[in-house]
Structure formats: structure tokens, C-alpha cells
Length: 299
Image (cartoon, rainbow, N blue to C red; front, side, top):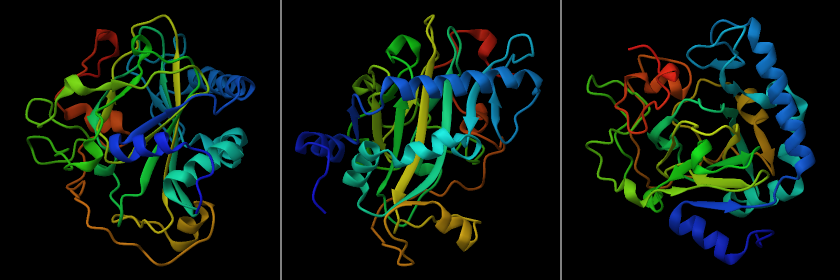
């Protein structure tokens, strides 16, 4: 396949550093429509009191002061987020990185409200869903201008070419986070993924990343699409064949799983706190912590 969109420099950065930031992928009109959809979801969350199939709520969420940290599977709840996957520019970039045939793993819309927003501790996506090969990536669409102070994601370049770190707690159960006190990582090498609204980050599933709380007076929305080459088959899955094949978004289906010698730590035994990554990480050691103590989960 010939390269369709990314420059040779961008492709090399992704291969060597495990991430790339591309500005101007999403136009402002589309970003605004997505922000409006998000605002409507947040308003509707006033009637919700606990996590459900749509909402992951912040600690302290109330009807008077709704606090949402994630909209789950937005592509299943609103056509805008499903149709965006077929935007030509986004499709071409994704195929540059993964090849012609691409499957969607999941989508989510992470929210960091001003002076709030739960941190996401250091982790590798690969720890949650290992596959038969590691042509697996996550695209993060910045719905707002994103800087360090409003909760930009950090990545540690080059970690996608190294080990899969332990994401289990002292009790042996999966907790979805790397222990910052014991992992052989230099957090001083972390790079902030900043950019204007409409920018998109792509980070490899093995790249170590995380984000702090939003300490600014500006919101930060990040729409994430997790995708992989169609011949990357999950090592853990309960899906039937029709459901699995329905997630193909580009190219042709295949029942040939491509195997690659990649490190794997299975996310077993499963986390004691089930649900999203925020729930999984409740029992993990903190690196980013909670600057706003009202946002901290109960201990």
C-alpha cells in the first residue's frame, strides 16, 4: 500500500516514538457539533445516579452539579461519532498506520471539566486487550484546545518498543495501572500531547501514557477510537462472529490471525473494581494524584 496522507517524518515518528500528533484533521464545525452532543449528554446525566452503559460519572456527581468523566461507546449512541470514522482524512491516516483492513475495538469520549477531571494513571492499552499482533493504536481527537494545564495526555516516547509493564496490584489482581515506584521508567522523558481543537494524536497500544487533572478554567474533551489491523485477533474475547465482524470499519474481513512475537501479560485475574479504567485504577498507586480532593474516589 502506498502512503496516502502522513509524511515520511510522521510515519517515522510513530514507528520510533510510538505516537504522532497531527493538527487540522477535524474542522471546527465538526468539533463544535461534537462539543454540543457532549454538552447534551452531560445535561441529561442529571437524572443518572450511578455508572451505566452510557455514563462514567465523576465522584461528587449530582443533579445540580453534573460531573461526567466519560461517555461510553459514543458511536453507538449518536450517529455523528459513528459517521466520523468514514471521514476521508481520518481514514487515510489510520490506514497509513495499520494497513488497508482495520477493525474498531471501542470508542469513548473522555471529559475533564474545569478544575476537575479524574486523572488517568500511567498505563499501556495493550495490558487491557492484548492481540495476536501489535498493529493496534488509539486515535485521540481533541475537541478543545489542549494544554498541560487542562489535562493533556502525556506519553513516554519509545516505550512501545519495550516491555509490557506489570499492571497488577500488590494483591495480584489486575488494576490497570503501572506502579510508578517500581517500574523502570523515566517519567522525566514524558511528552505532553498538546494541540488546538481538531488535532488528533495516534499512540501505539504499547506506549506508556497517562494524564493529570484539569487545573485550568477550560474544559478538555478527548474522543478516543481504539483500532487495530483486521488480522490482529484478541487473545481474550467473548464476542460471537457476527458481532466481531461488525466492527470492521475499513477494507476486507479475514479469518487469518497474523501472529507476531510480542510480549504479553494477561489482565488476569480480573480487576476487583470492574467497569472503566477509572474503576480499575481505584486500587493502584498514584502518580498524578488528585489536586482537587473533591474529585478523589473514596478510600
